[in-house]
Length: 213
Image 1 (tube, one colour):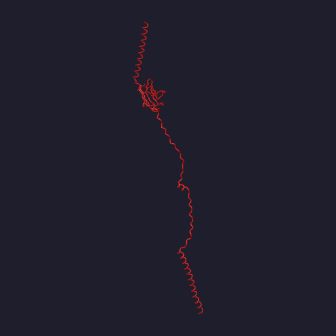
Image 2 (cartoon, helix red, strand yellow; image 1 turned 30 degrees about the vertical axis):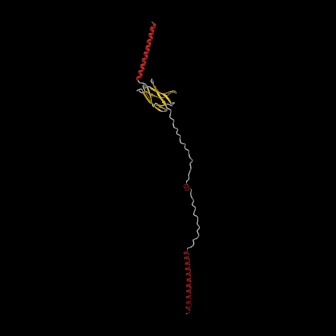
Image 3 (cartoon, rainbow, N blue to C red; image 1 turned 45 degrees about the vertical axis):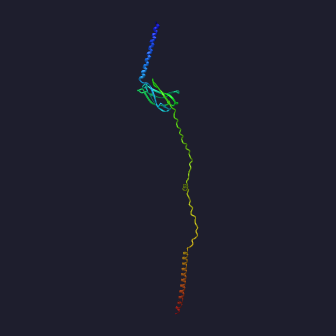
């Protein structure tokens, strides 16, 4: 008899425990249904380290903080943190951290909610190396033009060489003129002497005869 009573008590306790478990499950499911299923999205779904990505989510507890991380084989890398709005959503722009290329889980962890999606981290594009042109200084060559040299160097003009010319011979006309003039003078002198002599001869007898009469 006592054993039967003990068995009934144990069964009642087990039934109460199961009922409480079912009730808690229904309450949790109702609460989850009330604010919707959690969800996270990223645009674009693939980016490289340092790229900016728009991350959003919904179904999280209003007013709570959501931490977004990248989880992979080499660890957990923080990405950003967002505040959930009254409509249970969040959205913002985050920068992908410097991680190795590969596939990760982009995970949003709230106060009581978690959501995650696959996210690919691409290898960074190689930066083209631009070689700056090397400048070789050429020696400066000063070119002096012939014109500039002539203008800069004063030139000394030598006086014209004296040309000795033989004395000019008198022309035939000049000799003739001088000779004629001389002859006229000489002829005049001779004529004057002759006239004087003639007058002297003529006057001499007259003077002698005059006193005699």
